[in-house]
Amino acid sequence: MISFAELALNGIVSGLVIGLAALAVTLVFGIARFANAATGDVMTLGAYAALSGAGLTGSLVLGGLFGAAAGAVVGLIGYWLVFRKLGGRSSVAALLASIGVAFMIRAVMGVAFGHGQKVFPMPMVRPWRILDIRVHPNDVNLCAVVLVTLAIVFAILHLTPIGRQMRAVADDPSLARVSGISPQKVMMALWALAGAVSGVAGTVVGIKTVVSPEMGWELLLPAFAAAILGGIGHAGGAIVAGIALGIVQEVATPFVGFTYKIALSFVVLLAVLLVRPKGLFGTVAGAR
Amino acid sequence: MEAYLIAIAIVSAVYVLLALGLTLQYGMTGIINFGHVGFFAVGAYAAALLAEQGWHPLPAFLAAGVLAAAAAWPLGMVSLRLREDYFAIVSLGFSEVVRLVVTSEKWLTKGVQGIPGIPKLFTGLGVGLPNSLAVLAVLLLVNGLAIYAMRRIVRSPFGRMIEAIRDNEDAVKALGKDPARFKVQVLMLGALLAGFAGAFYAHYIGYISPDQFVPLVTFQIWMAIIMGGVGRVSGALAGTLILMLFLEGSRFLRDVLPFISEVEMASVRLGIVGLALILFTLYRPGGIMGEARRT
Image (cartoon, rainbow over all chains, first blue to last red):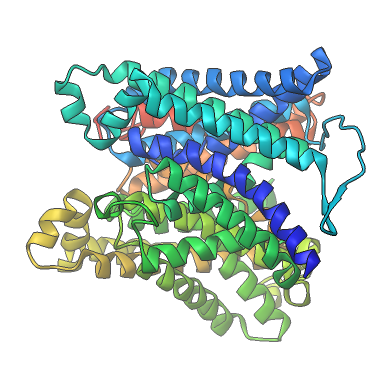
């Protein structure tokens, strides 16, 4: 029973990461209206940037900020060079282009940093024991990082004018436009925000596990699954669904084995599409 | 030299078969299949495992195609009724799960070690040139049949229906037809072709392992059909030719530039496929020969 509690706790950590990635996916899906397959590789880029940043400055916090900044910059570059020009085209064009962006980022990472696995220099710490459950201080710190990131994102979305404009575009692009909201400004804010969120997510994954060129791509499917489970375009839903998915993955690991973790999110994805395509919190219009 | 050209021709013919399947699915019907390599893998593993069991190639090949098509059915049923990008996600996930399954189920597929020693076809004719030529002839025959069938389909009521679905699904619905049913059928037909392609591939290469069935393969085929011109059989042929020139060319490039390691070359190849996907969707969605029309 106790080991299950530990697994569930572990699941919350990985679930928060999936939630962050799903948040990036769902923001783009809700506002730019396509499934951005480059999300995973922007995460990878964020992790490498954080690794370099931490190596340069000797501080993990500064490294994490490097990761977020790198994600935001690449998000903006991707928007400016590629997705901006695809506005008004079918979603296939944007989907394919996002795959192209994903491949290019991964190729650059592979050439620049090699294909070996890298780890963040983390001090070894003894886990705390709370009610006989082992809790790793690192995990607690990572959770705090994710929660702070989420707080910032939700504050931007709900407390700032640009956030209100982003939500308006997500609700109804034409109505937002005739209300005098500049689509370009909203899109740039969106891509910077989604990129920064992906960068932080990648950094957290990198600290928790290892950094390799394929790490982000492997998280893409769980991120998509959580975004759809939470309801496309629903930021809070993405987080809740991510945490749920993370816990399910970890708790199921003793039964299905380590490699089938990703397959589990596929099963969840199929089940959601079969039973409730609009997700937990979404609207019917989003799914059809 | 002949042996090399025949080898290239055989691999090209396998790729053409894949490209034809995707042309049927995306080019003609508008299904965004991002998991083509999954059906290819199902066909390859089915053929390899059945050959191990001592099956005759003919029923084994049929089984490989049918299994791939059968795998497509539940995917289509679940997600082709929903908005089109959901199927893109589901199919991408499917191909990754296929790779996970063949990696994990070591009792069946030997995991990452892969299945070696898959017998070559037509070895009775003599190993080397004669049996390779026979394989090529059969592949060309299968390709010819597939092209003939696709041309027939285009002119049939079914073909008009799927093209109408591609152009305006809502209009088709308004006429009282069920687009999802036709899309599932097309998906299965394309998967059938991919399954056959996998069976030929497994028997020709002689060794299959999970890392041959990565999503990059899917998007190489996408790159081929977009470069050649979406929705046309001639486009699939031209695009596959370009793809093969690119793949083989990058191999020769390594001979010329030996300081680039194999893993770096893999990254470069990945980057070029990515760049091609971006540039073509941006500037030439109709392919090299097509005009710069907007999709």
